[in-house]
Image (tube, rainbow, N blue to C red):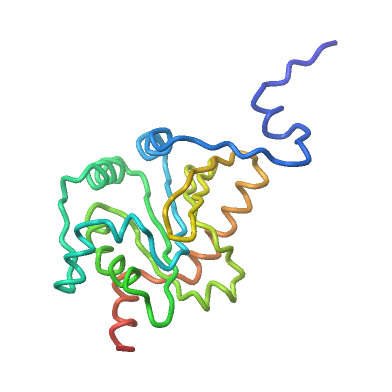
Length: 198
């Protein structure tokens, strides 16, 4: 008797190549994930700075005034507001150094804008992340099924996005998420900690 095995089962649980071939996707495919996820989108941010932030006019304003402006009608904010108002969860944990870099301080100030559209922004000191053995990887997890691993160059430019759907690997990233969330604190409490050390 023949048994029909669903293709997805074979892809996800069948024998794998000894050496994984990365599935790289273009920026448009990556952006669509933020519109099509079903229930959760979560990120770990581990870098000390991002070239995209340094090129942002809001960053320049932060350097001048100490406060970051924001346009609530930017596509990112409009989409995240739409997703969270639909009952979906969007969050992230950002690692910070002691003392935080200028870029980390900018993102800490900017977190209030993210929170205003429904994102759960949390922080973790890098030394605590090291004790928890968190990897130095930046990634998004969508619906606990798809990982978008972000690859950067030495100047903090995003080079490419690699999609990971192999279940055992996705579970590993979900375990990292759980460990990061366990020790992380909301951005406003973290900002108070940073202010107390200045």
